[in-house]
Length: 568
Image 1 (cartoon, rainbow, N blue to C red):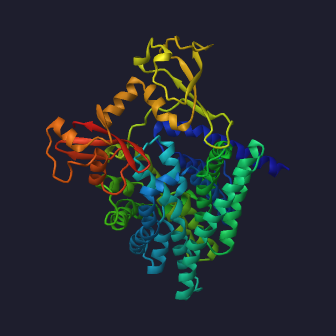
Image 2: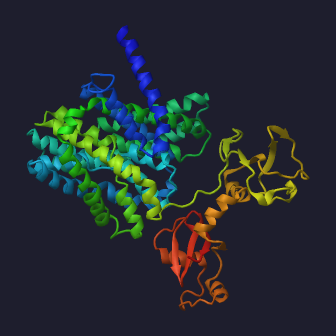
């Protein structure tokens, strides 16, 4: 009984401390996952609490459970529309990119640790893939708003690159312990990893989405059913020889992109589950490592991390993305920098321990050190790099709060809450506002008192307005309630003037005295910008033409609808 009570006391204390430590992360700029790892190390056998934990099998199980939950949540929040710009480069990075990174790091590790070729390549395979937990956490937790091409590529890559890393790690472990596969069985293993994950993940996800949408359940049960279905897909895929990690990510993707009231109940719960998984996973991994053992490999492991960050990852991105896809150099630079390592390399480093590979402690400690350096160097400088490479776009005005009304099963009405910060709305009567035709003001709060708005009611700064509308009304509502400070930031980025995407180039050229080639005069501005950008344009793309920056400010699917004019 004392053991159970102690377990509850310590686990509750560590989880609560980790959540409170998130405030430290935002204040001092340290990556949150690094703090979780540090707390685990402080609680370990050589730390303050002296907790003895060396059960690699238990850590391996917890790692799989937590990563599965994190990937399910990542899939739920990934929109299929982002695949139009991010899928192909992400797939290239998730396969060829992992192979190139692993090979380069492996060759250097072979030299710096005086290993055999296979042993060195195993080090490279373990740290070769980016980590979904780290990428999802850092991109969302640091408040970065990247252009869609970059963010989609990074998120999809981190959610789909585990199969290649697992394939390489398992293959090399088997070679080291003497259980060598034939070429045919090796190829079949790789095909099964990807093939089964695609078939079962997409098929199981589609069926799961249909089931969740058709059932009428208590609100709290939708998230449990989604979790159970996701774990079922993970287990079935892994049992048959496929990648459960890829399958559960695809399952979440299919569920998250099937509209319905179930998502309103699933997403908030899974956000908490994903955070709990990250906290638990990194605390356990922190408990598992021995600081004294880590120090033994610190210097050579630091060199491996630096080669990974500054050589292997950039080379892999250059070889697998730049020649085949239309990315700008600054986007290539940022994608190269965000090769974040996290829980996946540490979990993969347990494979040699469980497999009985000689000198298995080396692989675990090196992987742990590489993760620490990656989170500290790359994770700690993400906002700076985003600004330096100019891949960050200003966050537009969004409702302070929003939530569905639960009236309709699809395309439901929502309540949008805005605070009046726009000075242009001061003393303006409500009837004069240019509201979307399908939206209405349901309530107005002033100085903590609710007023019944009428057409003659005049707005004041600080008023809180509740608007009922649909998601398609958001762009117009956001523009209406844009505050002065946010408007200045947007105008500094997109330009003071904006043009409709359907405007003809010959008309614009005539106004500004610009020269067009014969084929460009009959183009629309949207067609002109899309042609100059190449591939799929995204919000934030800019074209420098005659000393003027033409910046994509609004998109509707694949179509450019608004373009800003910036003179610097």
